[in-house]
Image 1: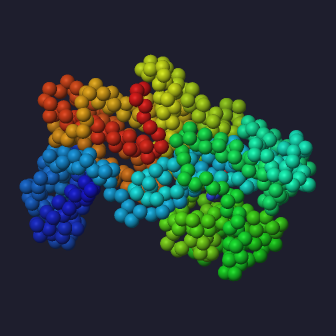
Image 2: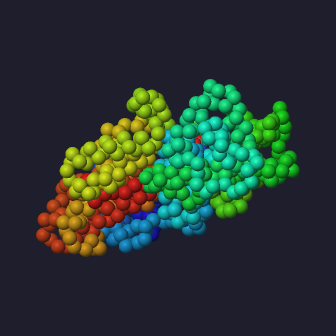
Image 3: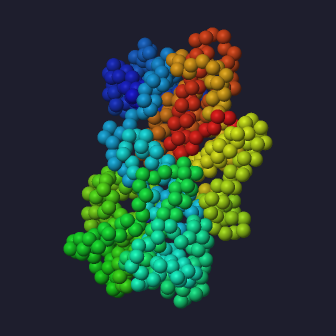
Length: 584
Ligand code: ARG
């Protein structure tokens, strides 16, 4: 479907042409004076310079040509040469009716769908998920859903940190506790048990214990390093243990991400990229882009145009160990081989932006992806507490994701129970949905790059610019539709009141908002849009006696309008990664 602004612009452009002026002057924008008009065209001002005529004369000529247009109920030339436009009720109704009956509300999707890999989540296996991982999951999931909605083939890749020192720490600790296990017996030749020698809760306890120990016990730290090295070089008993750790952790991660409505198409991790490292390094060696620096293998990425210093990217340390960057580049090799993506997006803390700059430069130099492949780091800021410092538990420790979700859920449940509007058997599910909306909207309504303050009272409020307020609007509409009882598949009618027209005009802005959110990878644009839309919906609801309306056709128009509003709101919150309850 043609976007409404394009349709209006085309009409005004043709009026410019009919009046003898260049149609290029007919560009229309949403009015910045909503008290005067709905749309405006300022083209007469620059046209005046070209045609050596007063702008008001040109605006007058064009207004004259638009008199008969079916699109407008009023066209006025206003000093010093603006065209003030108001849409006709019939055109607006027919535009909304087309939106209502067209797939995706007539949104112009990607003409040639792209293959997009989105790297987000990035949890470290066997380490607890914390707040930093939360933002990546929330933002990445939304960006993925938006890109899919535009028709792209999108692969969300969790890119687990499953190959680092934490594995060696766990193995070393386990060896101290249970040295008799077959995994530690070098002469063992049998097959290893299918069942892990520990549970997920032991695993959760082992890592922090081992990590703390390694900081005070040098001997233990060395054992953990050696175990990491042995694991990475294929020691069979350690590989078997690693598999156990992975099985338990992945199941646990899936549960956590399920709770967040976050899912991944690809569950690969750093370990999966390891086989690609050696061949990649050999190719880079042959390309002549690797240099030696104090025994390490590096790639120089400084460019003459750089204002700041961009340090070389280290790929192999002097002791032969590979690094975070080596693995990320090898992962890119793998993604190129498996998917030939048009874009790879990394939703990672903005403090890693220099790192990604280096990474992308190496990838370009080594031609790991074709030059036209877009590589983008979508960096996000920190979630802070009310004191403006990174969010902590009340005791001052690192806030674990599960604990945070529990706190939000408890807070919301108390409210839901207090309101007494939800039947007992629905309290848990309703609470879950409101809590998700509070958490996700609280995060996504900020520009991703900005730091923000986590404020439970504000995020969970049922009024104001919050997720629960959006849900509340949807629930309200659901309740009217339920009381109405009839089919909601009804045609949109021309608006009669201003509130009705305002709501309809807000609905027409759907495509523009989504396109901006998609183009800029900015879910916050969708939040701003649904906040505005909800405002108009509530105002309309307030000022209109929908259920008591006696004129059947008008009532059907109202029902059609709120049903369309509801569909759009539901679509938008789904793109943000949450959903509405039946009641609240
Ligand atoms: N596992 C990393 C961390 O916890 C994040 C990974 C980000 N993604 C990437 N491709 N480097 O900090």
